[in-house]
Length: 248
Ligand SMILES: Nc1ncnc2c1ncn2[C@@H]1O[C@H](COP(=O)(O)OP(=O)(O)O)[C@@H](O)[C@H]1O
Ligand SMILES: [Mg+2]
Image 1 (cartoon, protein in one colour):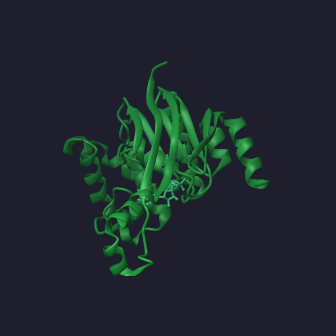
Image 2: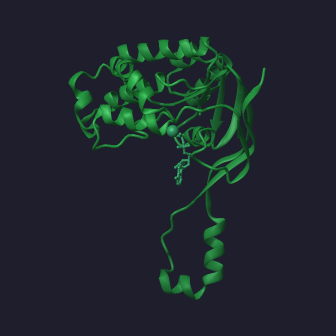
Image 3: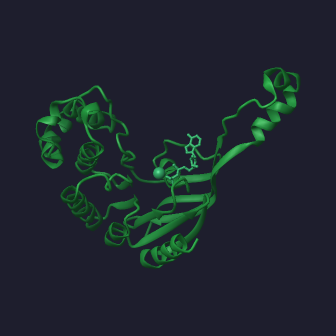
């Protein structure tokens, strides 16, 4: 089995936003010290995370809000760079599927499909040939011609998933978009994800639905307080996580 995603002691820090408690004059008067303070006071979104994922694995990331799951996916998608440590990704990654991510609010559903297809490296001809399948999968009816700022979150997730499902990713990244769709669309997405899995696509899923995780993923990685808490068979990790949420 070949490794397709590898994190070696990866940390991601963000600058923290400040109020100048002593006022701007004080800040400027003590400039070197002030700057040092700003530099040291960084928000640690991820701390020393290491794991590797093999080709064809299906892995869920779980953890509370703010734990660092989306940051992890952003690093895999290479839209974020680690502050320290190394991220290695050796296959074609689907664009990170987040709600509305990559969509332009004033363009229609169809125009957004065209835009995304081209951004993802398809030729116009390829986009055209997949257009019908994408529109069919999304089941948005006449809304497909409306600007997507008029879409509900469920409709956005339909459009996003449909685009991704009709590209051919080698690594599929899905960040919490299934939950906002209705039951029938969720079911359709889970079936599609299972098909991807059968055909050997590596799947990385962030979800708060234990059912979805157990249905799709063999392995889960639990991130707690920006650190890796547990990595193992999905059933074991979900049991550990559930216990910790109910008895914090
Ligand atoms: N661009 C950013 N600037 C500052 N802090 C951020 C930024 N993105 C995320 N964070 C912080 O990093 C932490 C982890 O965020 P995230 O990975 O989105 O968590 P999760 O997806 O697990 O809910 C959160 O506390 C969040 O506030
Ligand atoms: Mg998130």
